[in-house]
Length: 207
Image (tube, helix red, strand yellow):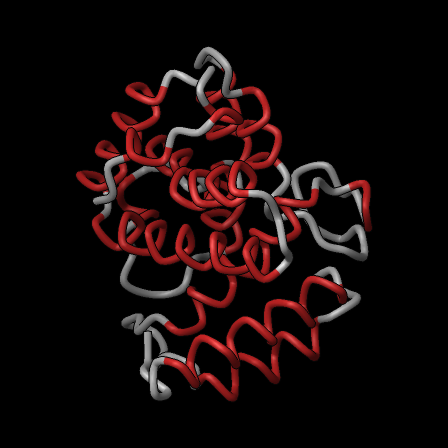
């Protein structure tokens, strides 16, 4: 796991990074898959932020947001979090609470209010049909809109017991299809540019 202390710049100096790092370790022990997913999302967030010409402070904040976005799953019952098949409707309702749970947890950490807000809204949809608040468009925080795309991309590329990973081409097709409904269309375009540059540079390596 990344050492969060190495990513401290002015924008996050006020945050109690030791407390956040402890949450990340707890996630690892609860569910190693979620921890691995969070690290992937953190790298994608940093790459996307760089593609969007954000400042170094904002890129580091994007990385930290990616790393902690699922800490609310600590409070999700293990039989749901680690279920080998698809969730029932009732189980999914419980799983959806992780965004609010994570925001509540981070709101108790000194200086982490901005992180808590971003986490709370990372499952909102651009068309307003997401959760937990059903807000839409640019009312959703920018980093939450970025996180929605990065989170979904890594989930699609991950091998799960109930489905095979989606190919890079398939992921790009799906992101384009959901632009303007699930995702911010401008961010979708920039994310696809980032993917094209990243995977060409890496020789089409898979995640």
